[in-house]
Image 1 (cartoon, rainbow, N blue to C red):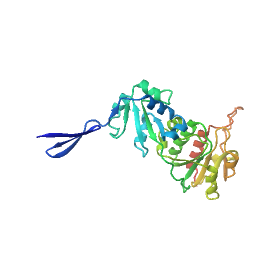
Image 2: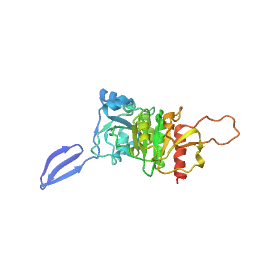
Image 3: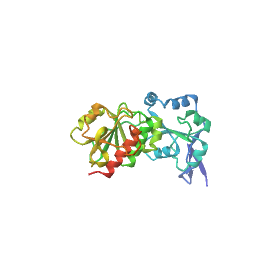
Image 4: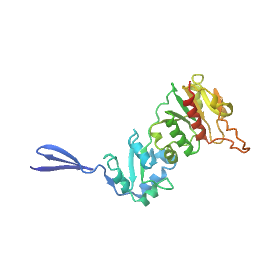
Length: 287
């Protein structure tokens, strides 16, 4: 028997046995043990929106989120991880992925987290799809949410309650902010999130679907019957829903505080908490 070695391509060896081409996977992952200063500088810069827009990439960190990305339609450009993480996940990683093996200190140098995870991925920012019309489902409309943790939590909660489309105003914090991505815990991979002029969006659907929004002088939200084909508006953390957007709201609701004996009470709810309560009420009390 004569074996003729023909080619080595990454982690796959091709050779002939009795004129038959045989392919053997030696190891499912190819790793590169190198990170240049320019690469590290670029990765760190992706914490800033203008550089994410310049390079068309964003950062995702952590075991769970990276595995969610691998199972999604999003394109991962490279993964930077510790040898321990690579070895542990070698059967999960595809051979076409570019894997860069780093020490924990090197990973810390490029991480956006105070306590770095064992893995970090660079992912292509996808082109925004056409914004769908609200049809027999709840569409969440976000106005000027500024805190990354709030937006990420709202996205995660929306997936929990089966809300697939989120429309954000242009001044809402960027979806691809690393803190937003982290707070979603992977839900951004499956939820459709759009940025647009929300006044124009509301104008397009004026008088076509009910628009719900939490305001101070609204009806008790716990006593409402919500319609399943609707737009739900969530306003800014401190200012709430703007006057311009409030003009489009057809159903003003309020989440009342519990009637306790305490004289001192919070003056409002956290935006992501209020959004979660309203989303749950939509699922509980939908016509």
